[in-house]
Image (cartoon, rainbow, N blue to C red; front, top):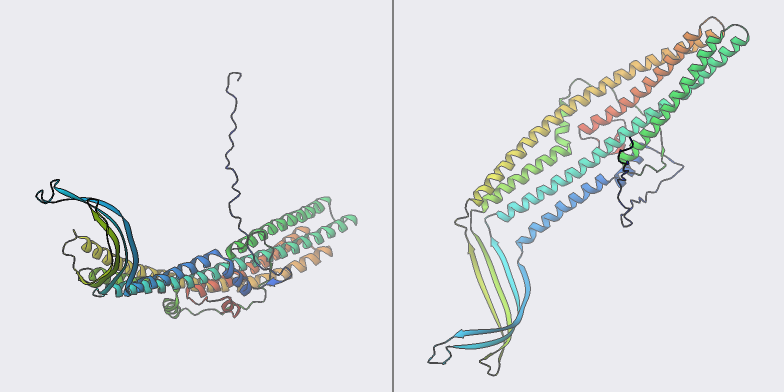
Length: 458
């Protein structure tokens, strides 16, 4: 339309900030080395931000204990006041007809003040206990973060290995398709095949090549996913050792009670929840102690350095020390319900922590039972996939040979070759699923303490 307004193009961008820090990781990598799973886990633990965050939280919790313990000691403060002042003060007129006099003072008061809380009916003890339990919870969280990282890196590693097995199988499928295409073209040259068969064989080769490239793209995605779990840059080139030949665990018995008891005794999350409960119980003791008096000692020593004059007379100076020591007794009588509210909140936090422990226990029981069943199911699938792969390999070899000899069809040979690759693909995926399920079971029972646990096949 001629009357339409011209299109306005808007660019949505922000100017670059030259002061924005660029994340540069100084990670030493051996470019010719293939890293095993324990070595990958070690790299992740040293470079993943999650473990550093958990460590700083544990460190902060430990420092908070020292913060509370410092309240047991006297607090000593040095201070100084100084200045000039002019003050008019009233006096009887029979002493001075003006009815007032003026005093000018110049004064400096360096002082040393001491405050020491001697007794508080256990309030500081409760606060210190809460801080110590907070430290225990943070330590358990730090341990749990490491175990979670081990699990995530292990899963990503096994997933990458399964995808790379698909790449190898894709290469095998492409070779098989090329062999069938060559056989079809050779038979066509001898007049024993049709152009339709050759076209079908060429299509199968093209399809195999496409699937191979798709598998390679999945390999790249899985590799980047592993680096992401490790906390490393996606531009990093890292050699990864294969998990082939890793021993598989044995089938588990149907009794999961032993595993559940182990998990409830060792899991970091239940340990952290228990420490938080103890911290809230200490907080309740602290709130109750606020109803009792506090007894403290306060002292001060200073040096009065100054001069004063009255009604513009000459100055009179002083430079003398003074000191005092007092015993302080403090008992709040009325606070508008403040302490009652604080105690009620503390009781609620205890009940919340108790409910949190119950919920954590329920989650652990469900996780262990599910991981137990998943591992047994994965082992059963692996056994079935192994038999399937062996049978499919034999079928693919025999049908290909039969087609070359002219007693089989191209369709049968292609179908058998495809089935053989699919069977091997299922076996590779089942193998990775078993290893991943074993890692999950070790994690849910609190046994995934290092990469060496998986190396031992536990």
